[in-house]
Length: 258
Image (tube, rainbow, N blue to C red; front, side, top):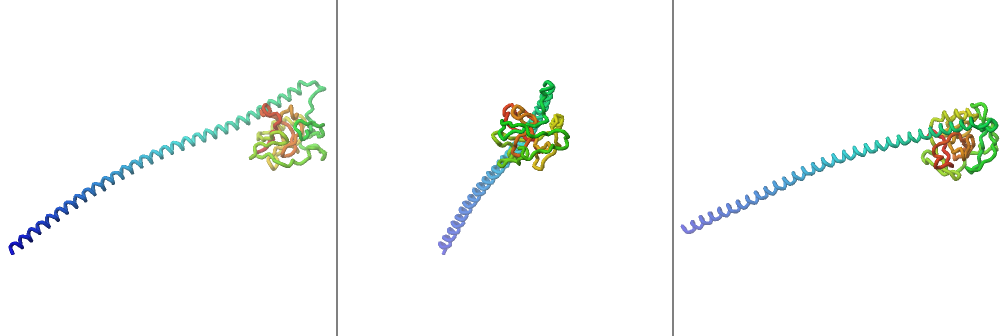
């Protein structure tokens, strides 16, 4: 009986020792797991901090880039506006310069050879082809002289491509046709002073008219002042010129409100 009791005591001690060992091992594993979790949490926090730093820098760089882009766009817009203004001023200067040249030529010409601008020369469809003048526009500036229907000035606008603001420029009867939008008061006054009649008005499609004709800028050596020229928008009258004649003397520039 005593031996059985001893064996039981020994077994109890052994079980307790084993339980203690298992508990210790379990606690060690928990400790290691906690350390690993803590380490992973720290890594996550570091990554979050790094991400926030990167995100902040990226936002700052984006804001800086957007600011530069906006400044460049504003600069481009200003340069384009300045360029358009310079082009318009250049056209105005060329117009005034050529009007002065015309007046000087008229003053220099002998009385018997004074250039008559009151009889527009009617041109054929070919830019260089000239035919005898058949239309006389003079007298009262408020109305146009009655025109024979057989005259080329009465023909409707030709079929095919028509000049528009969107197109900007088209090829018409073998030459370039463009448009411009400037104050035409000086041009109209000079035309009236030279005896070319007709009220100034703006047609429904935006063409700036002198009487029944679209006002056209052209090279006077190709299309004399006061001559009639066919355009994609109808018959026009040459009462203006511009700097474009230096590189494209056959070009015609139509006055519009676009």
